[in-house]
Image 1: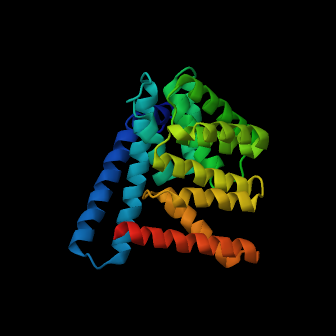
Image 2: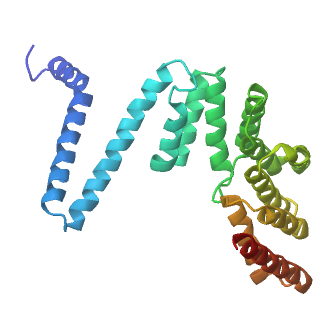
Length: 272
């Protein structure tokens, strides 16, 4: 067979393509190493530094996709790696690609409760993000997954049940209200930090889903008055302070001001 014949050229292309992936990996690794060495030799060169970070990011994305394929080929369990993989995609690649990966995992392992839980977290993260404009069908999928997860895990965390409530609020406020009502009825079983979390999320639910400003303030106060250091207490305190600045109701502002002053005084006494 001669090099100038179509058959020879096609055969050569096929043989070359068989090793293309390995060649690309080696070439990429060589270029990444060159940039790393150049960065060490010339640390003040910001162009080299930027190119190195760009190459490193591309390397991470490539490795993540290879890892994803390995994970999805194996049986799913609590330590299979699907949860940290989706977190990696969401934080370092893109939320949309994380959702695509979660969808693919569900397609391959439709009966796995581990995959359902990881996919539910992934879908919820996108749906509940402030910059998202979620598709109602995707919300229904996420709700269905969370309902299955909560049923499969009787010990489902407070955070997961709150997430289900916040998803329901996107489509059916009454169902969301019912979930929060049940959680509030069980609040005595929670530790102080758990109560703060519940009150903080419920306060936001009342404000954003029900436009109930007064009741929202009431629950932010409930979260703040619990003497337990947590991010939810701090969030509620910040909301109360922000309300003082933006609200035009003098009676409400006076109530919040007195509450914060009393809270500060009681904290000073407890420290003495």
